[in-house]
Image 1 (spheres, rainbow, N blue to C red):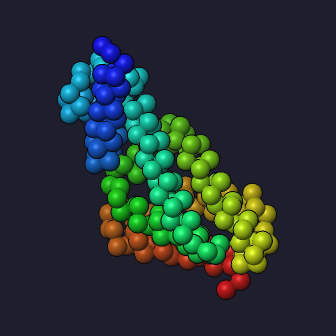
Image 2: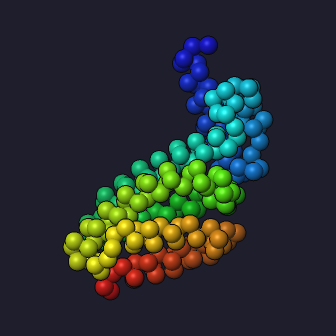
Length: 191
């Protein structure tokens, strides 16, 4: 098999895996279904991705990369630190509606999966939140604060959300996130 054919198979596997995982979550998605939808055997799937968990983690990495590209574009359009922070919050609310509850629960609620995904996601989030907070302090929009502690505090809400988040009612979920983000913004600003 040529390298190009192998790359095409790998791309089909990851695309079908994302589709299945986003729809069903990790637990309910079947490797048999993913392989069949990608037009490959299970052996080929496992050759490229050692396990179903490995495939799921790779999908989450790809989704995270896209999420942060979109997020960076939304933030870049804003002129003030408070508006950049609001854009982060608004983007997170909007993007939550794209993901089924099973996907979010499995990503954040299965400890051995979350342990593998957390570092990757947190590295990207920490850099973005720190830069927004830092610019807000410099311009006087935000209170003077310890950047590292405040960044970790803001990010810790992201880990707490899955335990509190009303998954089954989209409108209630959006109201919940708006309340959380309103609270955080109020705590950081002089308003």
